Length: 116
Image (cartoon, rainbow, N blue to C red; front, top):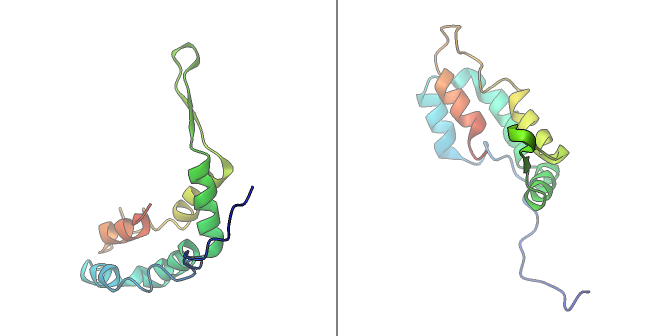
């Protein structure tokens, strides 16, 4: 039941979260991960999209469920949680560079998981 129209809310965020974060971009450059900038921009575009915000809002409304039948730990995540998690991990930015001798591995991993 609506009581009134709410007018003091900002419009939904629709911005490249990596692209507008000058400090994060500078840290990535300084950390030797300039090679990952294109992929971080792609991830930032998705993270700042209306779809990602909708997934996040729905995930917040439906928190993971913890069940412990017979002493076994089981956590049930909703599909929204999994979409958000897979968006970051399928880009493989969180692990790219480790074990290859490539510079900036930690900077790339940190930037890819920033805000998670």
